[in-house]
Image (tube, rainbow, N blue to C red; front, side, top):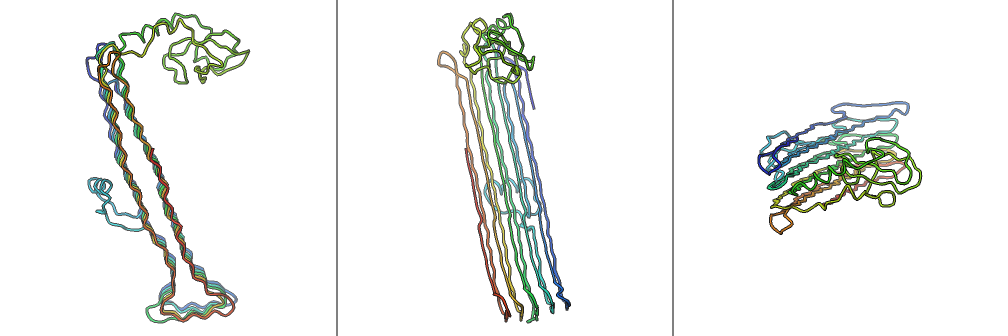
Length: 412
């Protein structure tokens, strides 16, 4: 959003106000199961149950607000996997206070055999793999550039509230209400894996620049416009020789003083004039006549205020479990594993700058910045055998539970 107005004398008003609310929600489950059955295979026949959940949110939210006086931008972003929908007010309270007004409804992945007699001549594999991932890139920029002969003032405010929450549940098991029979000639593998993750990148920029230079910048630009030049910055790729002059356009942003003329100091060379850094003193020198009057001095009070703030919450809750319960098992080997690798990688970047005041020490230039970031991982990994009788004929009985959850957070 852009607003341009005001006057050369600091009167009038130009205001740009933008607000953005984004909500992304995923509820999911994946199940592979056998219940209340009697399964027999012959000729080395296997039984394979494999459940996978790859739910994902990839959200990019960008908001920019520009004004010649007051620029205000506010962004609210709520991204959830495994949480029930709720209204904006309760989402905001949860994000600000770290509460759980909303109801958890985990993204489930389950592979299981329940109350089923097994006579299997091959192998049995029961696996659950959950990799729900949330990637959020959110930016909000407010830019105020107030410029006049005298009397102008500028204000920029940028605020962001972001909440990213993931809840997952991965389970694999063989279970009976009363003791059941599992007879397998080959190996039994029961495994569950969870890789819930949040990858969050939040950034705000609040910039206020107020200039009341009495028309010096306009005068210098006019002088630059009448300076002779061989090329213009918008001429693109050109072959240059020592002494050639290039005039920069009034909106040139590649490095160098807009509207000024620069002399080439190198040998014969082809350069892209529209993508060159003219502040590189090895190649360029500003022509004195195009910057004859010193700039950067405000002749009247040039009040400038910039305010920025981020509140961000990243929350991962993950549970992974593998087990055998109330079973009489005979197999070549039995391997039960659970692996949890919940991850948060979060960056919160807030930049606030203000430029104002005057050459006489009056006027106000104020920059205020704040970040509140909360990152939480609650995770567990369990593997167990209960109320069972286990016999392995040729191989091992293995139980393995791992939790390698990781949190990486950077605030700048």
